[in-house]
Amino acid sequence: MSNPLDNVSIREKIGQMFMVGFKGLRLTVGAKEFISRNSIGFVVIFSRNVESPSQVIKLTNEIHSLGKIPPMIFTDQEGGLVCQFGEMVSTFTSPMGIAATTDLKNAEIAGEGIGRDLSALGIDGVLAPVVDVNYNPDNPIIGARAFSDDPDTVTSFAAHFVYGLKRTGVAPVLKHFPGHGGTGVDSHHKLPIVAESEEYTRAMNIRPYFILAPEVDFIMTAHVNFPWVDEAHTPASFSEYFINRILRREIGFKGVVFTDCLEMGAIKKNFSPEEIIRKGINAGVDVFLVSHSLRFQKVLFEKLLGLVKRGEIPEERINSSYERILNAKKKYGVLKRKKNPLHASLRINRKKEEEICRKSIVVLRNKKGLIPIPEGTKLGIIEWAKAPATMPLEAAFERSYLINIAREYFPRAEVLILPPFIKEYKTAEHFIRTHSVTIVAPYSRFPEAEKVQGEMIRRFLSYKENIIVVSLGNPYDIREFPFAHTFVASFGFRECHIRGLFDVLSGRSKPFGRLPVEIRGIFPRWHKFEELK
Image (tube, rainbow, N blue to C red; front, side):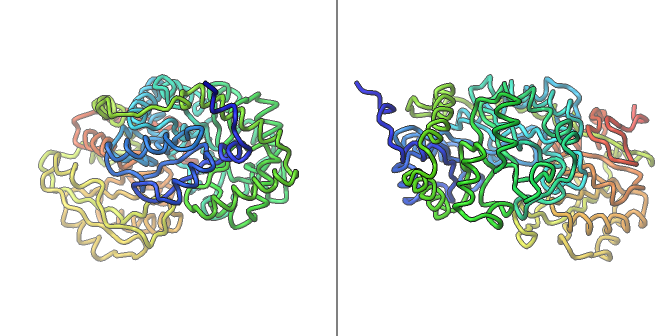
């Protein structure tokens, strides 16, 4: 019997060089036809594609059946803040929360738990770990998604997360090469420019890849410009210097290079489809990621196919990427077509998940002795309406992440949810004055909203001393209200975070975590409030 891989057309080889996403719980007719006809190599799953375990398994089985060479399915399940499968599978805590436990083994446990659940659902790879070193506290897109602002800490925890994932047969992806941790702009909207020197970039951003790249088969690039390489505002995703010279030759990476999504503003606002393809191919990109638009996916695909057919891109260049892709798919068993029934229960290690989240909670200040909160306290909670990641603030929804679990500990707890931009001081002041203790829980990935929340919290702190500020996302929030007397970092808002938080606030558990980043002028790295015994 002949091997179907022996007769792969140039169209199908080029198809392997694309990762595509789609909207809805089922493949649309157009997406299915595009993937199948062109043997698209990779598919990315987002929360918009997820409803239930049975639905996901049906979907991943269908995707794996398409094309001459089965697609490899990836998703974003970093843990904590970025979890496309939400509470359906293991979430653990954010990378910064894992580092806050100070135990490398917890990163391995998290990787294995996430990988095991996703493998059971037919997912082949995870777009994690994040190995960005978050040395810019104003970073609007990374923050608690990074393990630390210290490259050695990032390397150590990321390595153990990789070990855990690989143990389940799920492929890890290091991101975002050469580093997104120094950015002050969200690349979803425009191109970040990081002005540090070559020496600083190599020591801070690139250093983890020398250790970690040999352990993985996939790396994702960053849409970030470093002027010491290219003053013409070329992003690293299109940089021959970063991909071919540093990653391929200096580091010796032999695996597959993904771009980050090419529909992000950093790319789509600055480059034409032909420029995207030419620059990506010249830089050494193996896989072009297009997460949303079928039309744009088709445009880029046809651009690459046309350039090859006209001889402007040599077929040998396509073959080099195709071979790397095929080798990786063989390694992870993707080429063997098989149905994937739900053969395992999900989140079987929930107790360990909650233990790690509990140990990640960092009490940074408790100057007024408000923690632990006495049993029976009339507890108030103030939160802000939240917009999902990458969505505009107009999409913010009124939902409390804290109240349901809070009432298990404090049955009289009440919640006030404020709009993201409007400063409702009068309502908030009344709420604070009528509760024995008030938890104020800021969270936003929008700098504008962070400023508003920070300004309001400064005012709140003047009303009464009964306020516990809990950062649900970045611990850097305290820079907006540096004299807060009670401050706690949870590094996320998943169920395990909130349960761990209230275990600590109620006194059922002692605070364990330490801050994995420096907050300049306020807290040193690895700080915790030491007076709690």
